[in-house]
Length: 459
Ligand SMILES: Nc1ncnc2c1ncn2[C@@H]1O[C@H](COP(=O)(O)OP(=O)(O)O)[C@@H](O)[C@H]1O
Ligand SMILES: O=C(CO)[C@@H](O)[C@H](O)COP(=O)(O)O
Image 1 (cartoon, protein in one colour):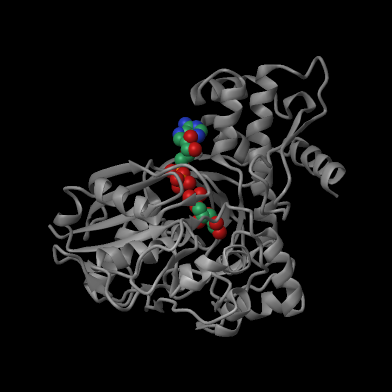
Image 2 (cartoon, rainbow, N blue to C red):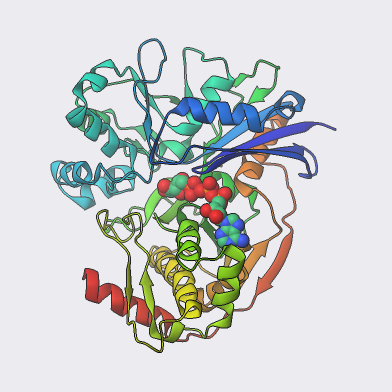
């Protein structure tokens, strides 16, 4: 049996799956936590990868890394980390995003150039922040890479040339998914000078080998990894509920949304991955559970006991600021409190509904860009919640498919590794097992109440 390994180095943890390259069956898994915070020393991810992959990576004939997108990893001329990486959910570069948008001539100019409009998540804004706020650190920077690029480079023994892929490169703000080219002018606009960037490999290229001799595939961003790990059909939209909430679909054509709501990313197969991301997803539920003095199972029970609409309560869940809508300095709000409504059940329900309404707006934004939405595939840590599944079917208004429990980012990376190893024109056909499908729920006014509250508080 030929084994391949897939890695998901995401915000909260590193997960490794060892998979039979022919069937896609998972034969072993590993996991290690990442440090908390919105800036993290990339060496901590490398440590976590070695821990999670211990006893697994050596058994693989090929390996690939899926990683959290956008994080700014800056290295000096000796390949050493200059400062901790600023992550996708670090909002300190919101001002830089506004400046960069204006400097290029506005949102439409950015959408046209690289398929996205700067917000604090994107790498180019973090480089601008670094250049303006830490000039001594900035002066030492020789090259910039993304979290998955850094780990692939470490796995390859830190070669002279670092490698990335279309998917992750498309989230930097200085690479265009429409033209498949870097935009050195935009990198320079952001950072003030030219620095090294990884080479963008072909989707199934073997880019190097590990110390134990495994072939290294290009890897990709975590959302692109998930798209590859799920066998998507036309009309499928994926909603991932991890630290971030994302809604995305594979498309043949590039997307350039000048409102900035949909980011025109590339996927990991040579196509495109229009995507909407929120900063507040699974952790809204953990915060709500803490507030209610319960755990996630308790929150789930309470939310399912409440009526749809939470007695009128609406949570705008901008607990870590927000990216979509673009409100980096926002905080959360709980509105429509009355004595009757203010029960633990309604609070739990409002947390689930608020988290999902932001993603439902994201699915609508994808549809507005021409994405066909026939069903939603729900993945990520919070997709385990029964309340989330039930509310999702209601607010999305489509059937909600919950794939069998699995680490779909890591599986997608493994599938890419198997593809690179095979030398075939297309990825291996691995089946997608479904745990359950929840029928579309009837509209109950939840989204309207959410939209009204958002309009009232944030315009
Ligand atoms: N049963 C559950 N209900 C709600 N949230 C859950 C459940 N199980 C795990 N989670 C949450 O899922 C999150 C981790 O999901 P994951 O997709 O691995 O995130 P990331 O990829 O961002 O690291 C954690 O915040 C965890 O609390
Ligand atoms: O910023 C984005 C997508 O644009 C996030 O989706 C990150 O890629 C982090 O993912 P998770 O750790 O939440 O999976």
